[in-house]
Length: 295
Image (cartoon, rainbow, N blue to C red; front, side, top):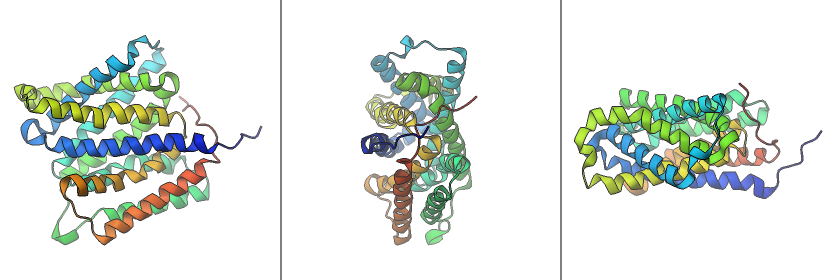
């Protein structure tokens, strides 16, 4: 039986959610860097996830969800991937500029998009996104070299991001944003011991608390709830390709909040990435409803 074409509203709704989520995450990342001198990346990740989990528990009340053993497994893996992605990304931000860190981290969802592609047109958009990413990463630009350890952290965050996409779709298909709330709780429990050992009593510094609340909302509670809804309304490969706009948003956030000036090459890279995202969006209108990932 032929699947009816997706309506314009059904196509644009998850795309709008993703755009809001990505802008929120990058704004939160810029704010989080101001906390590093006080509690480090480890402590910042811990407070972000703890406050986000409390907010999502109060708002979404996920304990009402009835979990099967399979659903619990998916949520635990999703939460651990989420925690690892946040932790490694913040570790990378200590030595790598925001736009570059996001570009390296994007190798995870890009791999998801490439692995799930079947049509020649899909590879065109992916190739264009890759070209933009290569232009966006200024290796050797202005005599500056990329910190190797920071780059490894960012690539590790990309691996966690790929797992987040795959298991987030599974968890969200059954429990929606309640699955996202439970995943954030798991992430907080997973990362908290690291942050507590590293930062100790500094986590209770009064000046840090309001910043941590802001980061929790901007970087976790709001965007991951929106992404969980979007994940259940599009195929994983389409989600991964659309997320190619994330490095561009990261570069713009770096310009606005951190004073990172973009070169002409980087602006061309942003154009290539946005073009790839638009192409993937148009192709998505012909896609069927997102399938639930198999075991």
